[in-house]
Image 1: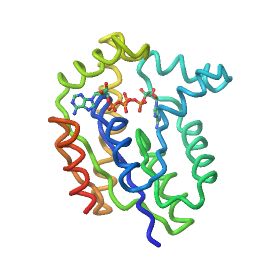
Image 2: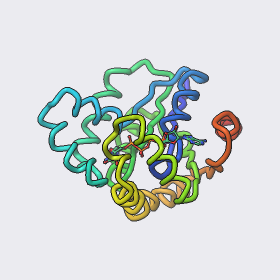
Image 3: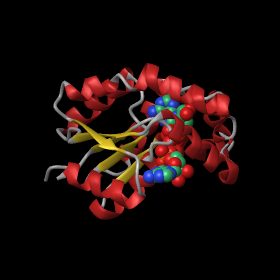
Image 4: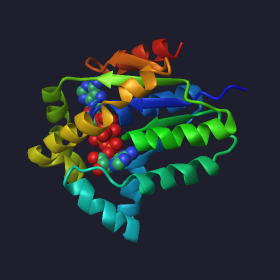
Length: 190
Ligand code: B4P
């Protein structure tokens, strides 16, 4: 059976977490969000969580080794999954390479990289809006939000070329109603 391994990609606030919830339900996939895994470590007040919190509160990326290790552990805990949605991972070239190595070893490659595209001002509005109610500290300060977007542009956006070269990159308009965007993603998955 071919596993439906998808990378859900996009800048902070593009709707990755939001859309993952619909896609895992529809296709019976396992959701792997490095942001959620890191927030769980922070809540548990682990050593790793304490290190991650300092970086996340500044809007910077957490170290590659940490997030790659977390993803590896989660994948090993779900060997019989029908597929995974990688949400917020990979975010650097090193992470993308490591993911390919892990998946190639099982002969279960990424099927598609779905990239949600949303203009910067809309991203800032969405994230500050969530920050007003969610308690997420990285969503409460406009300078931090804009730093996350800069980090994305510098370190993460180039991964579009990485997946384009493999014929897997699909751009999706991420502006509109949540249901309309889910429709676009489902069409792109085919
Ligand atoms: P994440 O948890 O991945 O957070 P995010 O990029 O901000 O996106 P998120 O998924 O939460 O938001 P969404 O787009 O769904 O990362 C947080 C931090 O963890 C990073 O800054 C970094 O420090 C660290 N980290 C995580 N992964 C890492 C990695 N691989 N390597 C290194 N560091 C890592 O949506 C946001 C808002 O938009 C929501 O309020 C939602 O309601 C709203 N929204 C969604 N769709 C909408 C629509 N269609 N219209 C209007 N609003 C919409």
